[in-house]
Amino acid sequence: MHRGSDGPPTEVPQVAVFDTAFHQSIPPHAYRYAVPEPWYESYGVRRYGFHGTSNAYVAKQAALQLGRPLGEVNLIVLHLGNGASVTAIEKGKSVDTSMGLTPLEGLVMGTRAGDIDPGALIYLARQRGMSVDEIDADLNGESGLEGLCGVSDLRDVLQREAAGDPRARLALDVYVYRIRKYIGAYTAALGRVDAIVFTAGVGENSPEIRERACEGLGVLGVELDETRNRSPTNDARAIHREGAPVAILVVPTNEELEIAEQTLQCIQTPVAASRR
Image 1 (tube, one colour):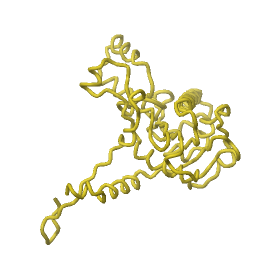
Image 2: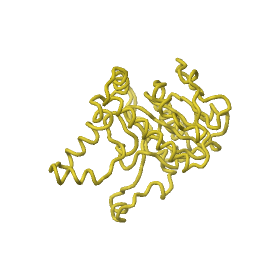
Image 3: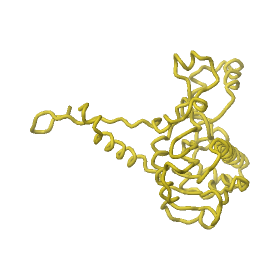
Image 4: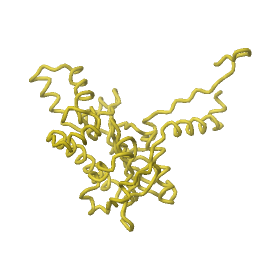
């Protein structure tokens, strides 16, 4: 309820937009982990995914760039920021994503480790006597680019690499290698890819990372145009070579607008209206 300054209370709709919602379409073979059944049934241990609001917006914009209905296109969306994820989108719906139960899984990030052998955590607990809280803090706050070279901002890592820092070079190699692995895996999962889409802070603003992420993927039809890639514009744009089998797009994300549009759609539906 909301009370106006000089009037009676009025009912104001309350809408929650969940960052995991876009990934509800992921099938069981992609969201289930091969763990004991009680882990899943009693504690909900499964892949949920994140960056869903960004993916929902970017997928629609990518379809517009391709000039095709969203329900017809297959996309690999790379949301690369301080947090990073990659999502396979088939006919407009998420079918797999790199983040899991938490945002820790998947790509290398600013301070998060991404994919890691769970046995390493057991080893550290036994050999170093590390607590769950200590391991959690290290994996989320002291790992990723930070753990590999001492800084978490990719711009700083690139500067250090240019200055000859071998740790920075390794950090970038690990970072882009993980991206390329996921592109390959999700190409196999989708069977056909219409576009690879870069978004978020790094994806939108770092031509160096886009170039390295696409390097060596010609066998998959991924062919970057260097001139287009280094264009200074901030608009949504294509950066692939003319005639390449797979489009490469840069699409600025707008999660706030997506939340506003989903909220408007929700409060305008008959179901929402009937519950007021």
